[in-house]
Image (cartoon, rainbow, N blue to C red; front, side):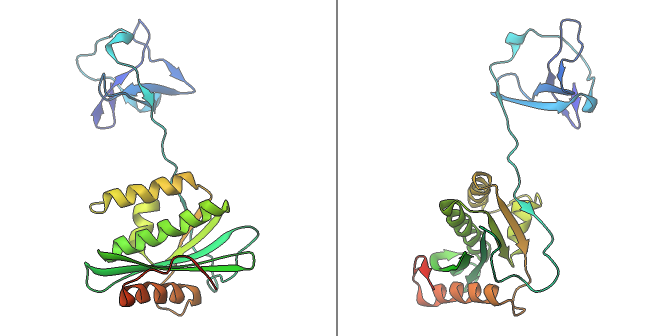
Length: 225
């Protein structure tokens, strides 16, 4: 069958009728690649040289689950928040770089209940995008460790794009995959974009922590403040 622009193998019965479950049909892109996908029957079209093969034609297939994307919502109108709600972690994450690439660092400010933690981390020579992504990763890791929902603000449009808007990562692929995996493990995360250097108190502080890491060439670890 044809699925959009690809030719696929689709599960059918002996007469060639598609076998669907809830309107979705098992498909394979190759007989023995070990991955089984499901496509809407309405999206499948006959291809040329159609033949019916036995089940043994395809090896065992593991059903591929789509990784849920972290939720990205439009930032609420009004001042950027400074206080967490309910049991959430409210975090601002930022990165800095002297040269691009060059000495790079990140800063994160996290608040929950009546607590505030800060992180200033030097990551060596890297790009600004790497620093921004790593800052997001550190915030997610903290919220996951605490077992709390996360509301995360970043002024990195790049991070928002590759993590929530389907941008294709042309560089930093391993790091992007690592952050996406962390987000899939901690799915109770909301990502927001905040404009940088516009007087948002906690975002400015995260920037200061990132710049300090670059200037001092050292990391503080998570600190209470």
